[in-house]
Image 1 (cartoon, each protein chain N blue to C red):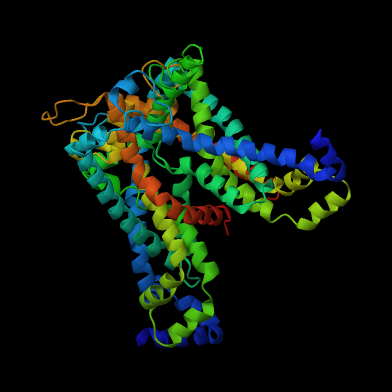
Image 2: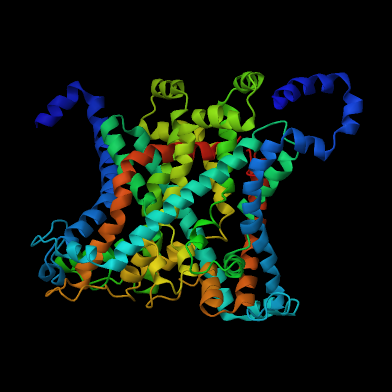
Length: 324
Length: 299
């Protein structure tokens, strides 16, 4: 019953004695009034603190010669020595190159193909055909990278993959889709497109459905065919969506999925599979070289953050909402 | 030519139909490419060893047998990893939803002091995190390596999900409804439980599915944190060791006289691991599509 009284009384006070109340309202006042809210909030705040903010202090070991037995406080501080050593390593240059190579080519493919697919789906009028298609196209998005990796080896494997069996039956010779560097790169990109192409159409299809139908009617009256309507009506209308999604994905060029590369890599291909997250795993968790691995992770996080901030700036300059 | 006769009377429909057929054909090829890999793996898993070894199985099973499946179901470690996956998925989803609700409801109250600061602190976690090694060292320091908790607790807080729920609460629940509840003497717990949660059911379903499918499919954290306790490996990690890396062999009971070839067993394992997702997929798809839409429309 107390809460009821407060809720009714407080607004009156606020309007009547604004100046006096402003001086009196301390943190304790708000804590007492909204203690239920602060109580609820304490749970997520605790989790965010322990699992998101506490690890940030672990980043300091990038400036230490960290020894897991000695612990954080007893380990020796070495300044930027770890970074100097890191930047001089050939593995580092290769990891940066691969991360950029995989992500940029992935961006180009995974960006254009969903737009084309959405344009095509948008043209289909029959609902059953459309719905069955969409259901099938969305499916790969729901599979884990392990399953996709396993499927990839079942289909594209050199010795017993279905594609190679098929090629051989047609009289061709077997292709090392996943067992040779350049072929692997190609397969990696195709598999990425396969996994994401259907899912990527959702936002574009939503944008297309809000295009004013009168524009299409006017275009038809002017004698525009299917392709001209796509090019001159649909695409310009969804341009804001395309621009914002492109900018947002530019911010992730330095990121990249660990699970995807890890599930598709194998012993035969090492040239393009060493990306930054893979190298962090190999150095840190497999070899226990925590300082160097943390330094590499920090390098990636900082560059990634800068890219996201730049992307946000560009988006805001173009009059979009941005992401921050 | 009969076709040309008809094209004189109805010129335009014929021309358009060609493109229509073309587009349908392209879409058909694309969606078949999503379906056929599964058809092949299912066919392989149901085939007799000899045909598989001879590379003669394509889209239909040859020499139908369920032998591989009986072997998988008798492999204790695979069933164990299935239990682990189910257990952590349920626990993770429940905990994740509790945290999300506990964060989203207070942050949707305009009168809450400090809500901007807390929202910003939550949003920062979306863009800057410690990374693989600091997370690993934290789990190590907390003594959670090789325990179930390393797979449940760290990911349960998701700033993305709570921001979605917060904007959904602010946009769908009218303020007047709450004010009248407060007039009747309801406190925040009561308002949350009796008004906000029932009215947010669709978005709660969507977010639980985000949590559940995300947890079910992830294997990175298990790969990092579950090293020695092989009994705690979730299904995806087990599948990784069995099929992708092929470093682990199937623990088959030796009472079987004849064991299937590894290729057939691998195919059956893939089907076994994919089946749960395929079964729920038709029902959860629409919630996911809705979630994508809400996530893309930030307030």
